[in-house]
Image (cartoon, rainbow, N blue to C red; front, side):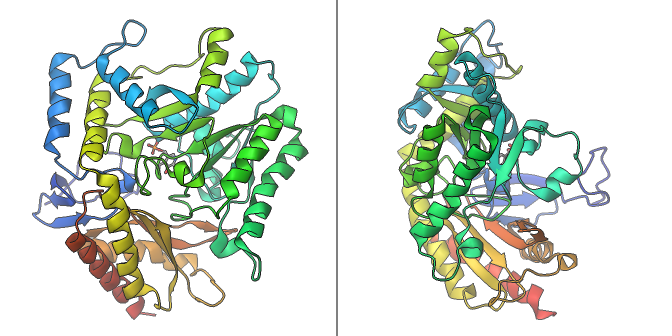
Length: 446
Ligand code: PMP
């Protein structure tokens, strides 16, 4: 069927097929083809498609009250969701600010950190430190924090000047032969201290990092102890720690928040994607009581705001999503099926000459593809290996999230798997089988 709507598609001339309906881990297109959604779109659809409890909550709230501006009202849906998030949050986090998506939430977190310092006598603290090869969103502040060179280039001259980037914690590529995990973690964390001292601690507002790096590196977990040292360094210099769990949070790695596995609490935790599971666009900034109290004791208001903050329908849907995840113990399924998927990928692809690394946590897994396993050389960018894999998988009815990550100045190829938490053992095997077929097909031609 010809599809020639007036949509401004991202890639000129590429019009994707039209999706019609979804059920569980499956999406059906209008031409009748079914796709196993092994990446939840962009690690979004964590509850699968068509969950009746969420649909009911959405429609009930829309019928009761679709919208009320926060300058006049709060709503039960927003209050209940905030209370639930705080009950389950890492220690010390006590207040929630709702936004529409991850980028807005990151913008808000950066601005919240900035105003916090102004409220507490640190007006010079404007500098944001983030990491190379990271992604924090596409609005200008979030893009400035992101360290993905390719995404930034088009907007040269438009990004926030007071940002800088240290190396990520990436054992596969940066840990040197013979270096222990703990020595590497200390070295990677130490680069934050070096950067703070270079800038002058009195000028630094915050450090922002993805707890498990998603799109740009492909599911890279931190080395053990890295984030505990980062926490100490931030505390030593009065720098706020913002953890971006937009992609890796809300259960994706097997615990509600990825930072639980690191044994630390950030000052600000940012979540989105899985919060509304794709039923609604929703993000949240969960901040410490200390930050909130500084606003209360200081100017009394956060100089910020968006029209759709705390949208009742979005909050009601997200509340239903989170209740479903808890009542069906789906995080246990994330851990069990995640281990199965990791094992199934390893069994089929671990010795493949072009699979450099299989990594991740829970149902947040990635494969990095290399021209040479021995020296980890990436493929030439013009081969577009990630795109070829995505297209081959798509033809086989499998949705995977394929990215051209940046590897220390060169482009690399990885694919990311993030199926719904409801995925079954049988579906896990189908994901691994279809992916292995796609990999075989792509590399059959040299
Ligand atoms: N942070 C991270 C870690 C992300 O993966 C993303 C989205 N891929 C964002 C922020 C931005 O979120 P959104 O696309 O919802 O604006």
